[in-house]
Image (cartoon, rainbow, N blue to C red; front, side):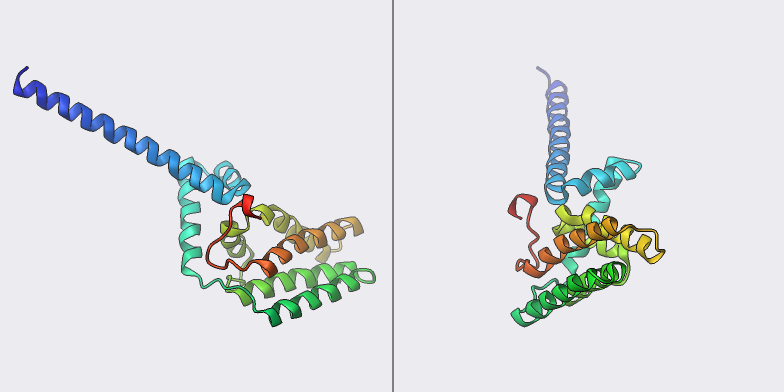
Length: 188
């Protein structure tokens, strides 16, 4: 076999290995993101023009999360927030709409105390998606119901559902002692 033939064979092998490596790396990244974001991965892919763009958005969320100083609550703060939650639940009986608004504010306060961005809802959701993807849809639903409650368009059952949804995320935020290492769904 001539030297040119050997060069062609070597180049073909290198190109083939590069292509295989590219595909394997893409599949590995996809599995990582699916494991990390759970149902949020599918939602972002569905809402985005391409899977590549969706995956980049999720990678950007991970990078944003890594830059934050997310910390667990100390025992005193956890106890104070748990007490406030009980008070909010008690007010639900007499003023369900007001209690839902309070629950939203309490979840936001816990997030802020832990180091999450708390200013804008979408930013909160994006950062929460990194470590709390299992309760993220519930948080979105609660927030949507809270908005309807403010316009007096929510039923008492809707408001009860909002409280249940807020409680799921509230409990996670209160009990999450792994501040900078978000747990996978299976670990919850």
